[in-house]
Length: 430
Image (tube, rainbow, N blue to C red; front, side, top):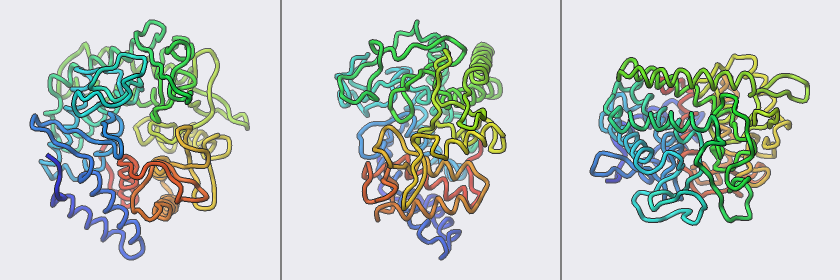
């Protein structure tokens, strides 16, 4: 089943946002309404078994990461709309079905066993998998969604047997990847684009076991230079806390709680001991990636989790001095992916051309500041650079917004919507 029209609760919420925007920000409301409706009308497929499949946009597959971010703003409405909550619960169930039945290392899945996607990749592919790039966040996001659904609606049916088994599998993968040398995972792609494959016979650059958990790829689906991706390890610390709460207050499993607690402590210690570097002024900041041998990168990517997103995800606070120093550094030319041009400024990615910034990163910048004027500046830039589509793209040229990647991108649309909501102090409960 697909949505043929917008549910009444969603339409009412769109009217509320329109009223809040008023004449002053009528352009925000126009884009908000287009984007907020677009995700429901174009990406959501509800299956007869009660599960939900979400297209990422103009690619016919579902990413564990994207699908979570696509529905997150609807949690605010799901408090009062049981059917919308059921749709989101169905997504959690689909995500955990994929994790336990198909593959915990895959990042994107097909709606059926149709063999679509990157079937020629040298890794353990099957007809259900669109792509098998292992990313820590692909396991973190479904856990986050299950938890946020519970916190915002009180709903617990998503904590079913598949969820419990999926948590065990996620913990197993995180622990296995603390010593990646012993991992069964490898990935190679026959491609000219080095970001789409792993070096060292598909194992990636060597890492030293230091408590952190390894990731083959960034949330951009680009390969990690060094295997310990710090923002994703931060996200893992947060969701490991969620697991402890769920299996203490809703479900009862002391073994899972103990394993999550130890893993959380190991990763947190690894971040503190190995996840830092210095900027050009000699000030301590978070590194983006490290290898445990002393190598690291000073940068940030546009995709979430990134370092800018840490407090949004629940790791630390926006007032933390180390975060603020990191943020200041990354929103400057010291970050090789920070671009500033005639029409916009923000963080881009190795995934898109030089001088292309991402609306996702711009929205995240807005949601991790308390400065209303800064939020306003970013929202104004986002609506002014949509190339007349009233929707967000993947990335666009800071000097020519008519040049962009991806005609429509549901994750970016919903990040824009969440920033509009944030401006008016409407937020998902964490």
